[in-house]
Image (spheres, one colour):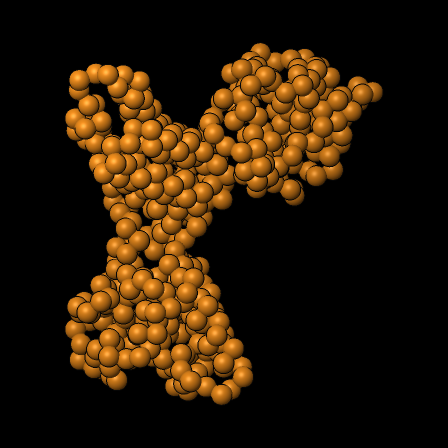
Length: 456
């Protein structure tokens, strides 16, 4: 795309007092700003130490000036950075002098947007910049760096190339119907298509992990009153966040706590005990609990093992299963196992629920095994190399691509309809290009970049 005709500037460091503050300028007037403010244009990528001047050639401050000529800069345009002392008043004076020279204040994310528009980075790399800034764990930062370096884009582009080659093959077969060989029925197309689907499934699995690292896993602790839900929350959080008493129904509202398990962010939600009640406040708490259960990624169904040894027999388990419509999202946690005599940490086989574990929240035993079970549920394996940050829109695009590839496979194997196979492959191709930004609506771009901080 052609370079922008206007010049933007912004303070690139957080607001407040600090050692230094950085003002970034990008666009055609960047060199003019350097000459006017610093009295010279430094050699490319060399830091010049000197005074900063106003329009009357009075000294505002002393600091560093750096020049990055386009197209070999972050934005692809001429970029100048002024590193001044970090006093808000001084930086504001410097910014006002720059604005007098013609630049305008940048919109949030506009520097990254220009880098994208000038083909310096693709959309996933641009998003990874914001995700790295917002990272709240070591693993999330590591995943974001891999996306920023193009790991996610490389995998997506490899699948795009394979789909393009397959489209060429299918369309060529359609263009030469008089040939004796039926290319679509020869098995080559089906084999290649199945290979792409397998490749996509691997990327989808990694993307789901990346989404968990970015957004966290929503885990709801549910169960009858006095089952030990608040005690379990306190143990997982590592601090006393919820009130714990022997009185049933102590928790009447939802209580949220954000924690990390080996770098994986969790949003733990403690809920009111689920039972029949005529108390208006308690009924509202129970209603909110059911709402959280329906929206959860994982429900820890906490059971008092001194009362029940097979939760499948209870109506509560059946109600929760019906509410979330996916038994794989339920993990049964048999609490008070130190009293009931169950083996701590041992898992039990439940008929339709694949996961259960024995713990004692009061004695804080079985918690390590519970955390490992949660990690296994998330499919997160932090001991292996790889991984990248993915957003919900990436998962949606990959899922849409999978649906179109499945449709193409059905058309190929049952209908032998080359035109329909080609159309499904085209839609799968477009779904993947929406991830990197090659085929993306302008309103989506605006939504993405306006979520960035100013100066980035």
